[in-house]
Length: 328
Image (cartoon, rainbow, N blue to C red):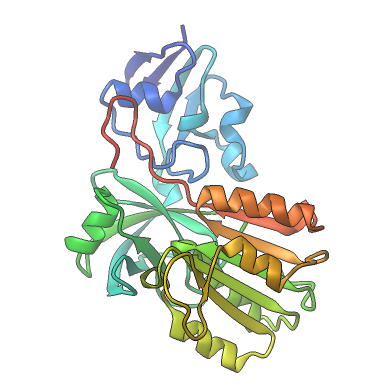
């Protein structure tokens, strides 16, 4: 039977059980969120024993070399001694400001207390003092003094509920990351860009488009933002102002329900994209937000002629509770 040792205590793992599930089942607190190997908030370090290769998929080579792995994806064959992510991976920060962008979206600005390098559009794991962790995309630019996160209120959500109702400027948090490949890469300034997202999937796209424009991108940039209703749209005026300043940038918001009004299309996001960009061959695409929509758009753009190497996706996976624990 596989066993894992953590802080001097051995724990047996059931057949096919991950290190994360086994430790949580025994009451050991381990930061985690998506439980799908995407957010990287459950990073742990192997001090002794062999880590399965699939538990390190998506990690930087420097992390792999130091024995880091994703606890949610690690199902060891034998004995494994582990430790939590070290201070070398985490940067202390404090909340600098909280601002409502809409009824359901909160702009959270964090001020790192130390160096924090990232690319606009990547994501970070935010950890509270009690170990609660969630991942959020970065809407800010690397030269800015604070990190900008867009947090959607989730019914019963522990982190979003705390940030909306209880958190105050000055509260301490830790940052882990960054991670993610959804960022602008210079080198082909004339290449058309297609950016599409739903809900707070706008956050990385907002950071990415401003980064591309600041770096002198000259090709067409189409940003599509979808919501169920008009109340789900935000940063509308900011994006329209950006559109007025850059002739290459087009902002296209849409909603599934509601009345047609100036500048906002009523209809499905994928239909709007197909109508505006029927032949995207040679384009570069960035897709963020709802996992089902991201997967569907990725497939449709590929079938329409877009190369898979030019499709960058960041699906927003919800936090998932361990077995027999109520979902947020």
